[in-house]
Length: 106
Image (cartoon, rainbow, N blue to C red; front, side, top):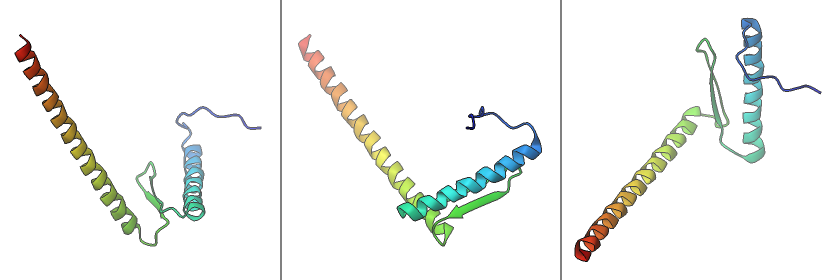
């Protein structure tokens, strides 16, 4: 049985490159399996230490997946802003009510 290795940077450059390649391939395989088994739309980007881009997409066109992500992110951000604005409005109303109550109590 293998014991877990400590998570730290691999100092030997050749070993680090081999590990990067193996883990990148393993990650791509897992992304593929997730897309097939669960009918999920998956996109994966990995940049090597030298800056080379490796990508995987379950969609035939990566741009479609990126666009879908951008739209979903924008909607979530918009909902978050509305929620924050509503919370601020409620707090302002509460402060006004508290101020009004304390003003008439004195």
